[in-house]
Image (cartoon, rainbow, N blue to C red):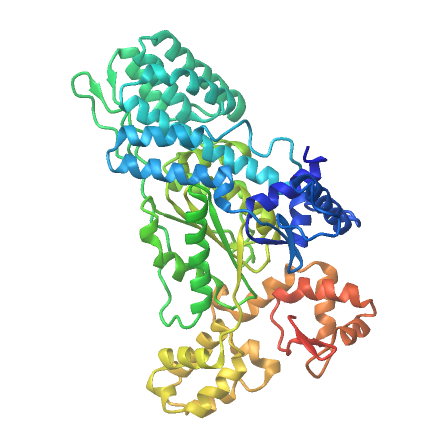
Length: 583
C-alpha cells in the first residue's frame, strides 16, 4: 500500500507535477496548509523515503532513486505526464471536442466514452491537505463537464435511452448542477417518461429553494413548460435568445445572457512592462493548454503607484479575442480610495447584475450568489478582471469554475491564492530610467525631448513610479511659460515632494492619498516599523540597523519589513551582510 494519508498526499502532488521538481516548501503548503508543524520538513523527508520503498522495493537504502529523485531543493516524480490518467483524460476530452466541432458525432462520442472510462471513483479520495481539496473540486468539475457534453451528443444522436442511467448517477453526485438535470429531464421525456421528467423538475425546484433560496433558471423552466405542453424539444443548446415557439418545435436554449464588455479604456503613453505582459500571457495560455476547462488565475501585485491596473488592462485588451463570451471588470476598492472596500457578496451582486440577474432572483446569502455566479459562467469563456483586491477571502468567491480566466491586481501578495487556488503571481516594480524617460518624452513631447538633462533629473526624482511621472509631466505641460528646469526644481525638495505631486479633486491620482491608503492598511506593528525607518537619515539600511531602531529582534524586523513593503519609501533597498534584499 502507499502508506499513511499524508504520504499519499505527497505522492498525489508529485504525480500532478510529473516530470517537474516540486520544492519542499510547496509540498509543505500543499499537505499542511496554514497548520504547519515544526516537524514538517522532516515529515516530508520521511514520506518520500516511505514512497521510495513502495515504488522501488528492490532498491537498496543507499541507492539512487530513478523514480522519485531529489533535485534543486525538492523532489521529482520521474515519469512521463502521459502516464497519468488525468493527462490522458484531458487529451481525449480535447480530441472529443474537436471531433464534435468537425461534425464527427460518432468519433466524438467514442472519445468521450474513452475519456470518462479513465475515472475510477472520486479523484484524490481520502487525501488530506488544501492542494488535494482544490484538485478534488477542479477534477470533479472537469468530469461533470465531459459527462454533460457526452450526454448532449448522445441526445443529438437520438440515443436518449442510453444516457438516463448515467445522467441519474451524475445528478445524484452533483444535485445542484442544473445542466445535468436539464439533460436528464430531456432524456426521460424523449423516452416517453413524461411523469418522471416532471418529477425531476419538482425535485430540482424544492432543492434549489431549500439549499440556495432561488428558483430554477429560465432554461429548466422553459423545458418544464415544453414538457407540460407536449411540445418537441431539440437538444441544441446555444447562447442565443430563446425564439418564439413555431409549430410544435421549440429550441429550449438557455436564456439570453448579455455579452459584457466592461474593460476600462487604456491610458495613453503605456511603456515598458514587456516581461510582465509576456509572463502574464504565458500563464493564461499555459493553464488553458494544460488544464482544459480549469480556471487560470493571475495576480498582478506591487506597491502603490506602480501601474498594476495599467498592466492588467493592457494584457486584458490584448487577449480579448480569446474570450468570446465577454469581459467583466470589478473595482474591489481594496485601498479604500473610493470608500469602504466591497465585500465578496457585494462584488458578486455586481457581477450577477452584469450577467442579467435582476434583484428579484438575486440570492441573499454569499453561498447562493457564488453558486449562481459559477453556474452562469459554467461553459463560458469569460475574462474576469478584479482590480484593487484587499484579501484572498475577498477574491476567492469571485473565481468561476471552468474555461474562464481571472486577472487580479492588489497591493497585497495574496499568497493564499497561489497556494490553494494555483494562482500565478506577477510582481510589478518601478520603471527603469530608460522606460521612465520614454514615458516623459511621449507625454511631454518636444518640451522635454530637447531638455534631456532636465528630463533625466525628473526621472531620478520620481524613482520609476508611473503615477509620479504622469503627475509631474502634466505640470510641465501646463507651465508652458516657465522653463522646464525651473519646473523640475520645484520637485527637488523631497520633504515637499508629495505636496507637489497632488491632483486636486481626484483621490485616485493623488500620490499622497495613494500612499496614505497603503499605510493605513498596515497592521499596527508594521506601521510602527515603517515610521522607525523614517528616522534613518542615510541609505541603504541593514536589517540589524532597522532592528536597533525598533528595539526588537532581526526575525521580527524581517517579518515587519515584509508586511510594510507595500508602502513606497524614499530609501534604497535594504542590505544585510553586503547583499541587497527586497524592502
